[in-house]
Image 1: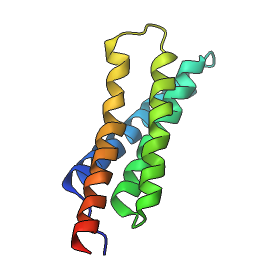
Image 2: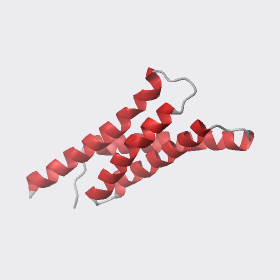
Image 3: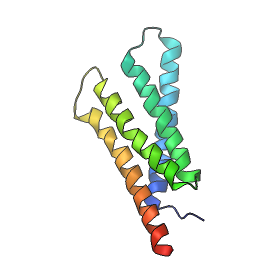
Image 4: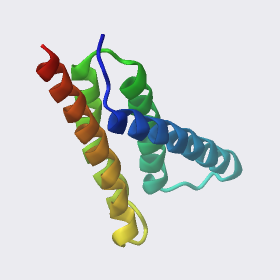
Length: 116
C-alpha cells in the first residue's frame, strides 16, 4: 500500500475544498452573466484541475498520475495569473499550490523508496 505524506494529504484536501468552492462561485457567475472574459474561463479550468488533482492526491495509488497532475497545475496556475485584468503579487500566490502538491508527492515517493 502506498503511504502518502501528510503534506500531500493536507494540500489535496485544501485543493478539493477551494476547487469546489471556486467552481460553485464561478458557476453562479456563468448563470448570472453572459459576457465573460478569457480570464474567467482560465479560472474555471484552474478550479477544476485543482479539485481533480486533490481527489487524485488522496485516492490514487499511482505516483505517476499525481506527478502528472502536479506538473499540469503549474502552467494552468501561470496562465490563470496572466489572464487577470490586473496583475499583482496576489495573482501569483497560487503557484504555492502546485509547489506544495509536488513537494508532498516527493516526500511520499521518498518514503516509498526508503521502505523498499
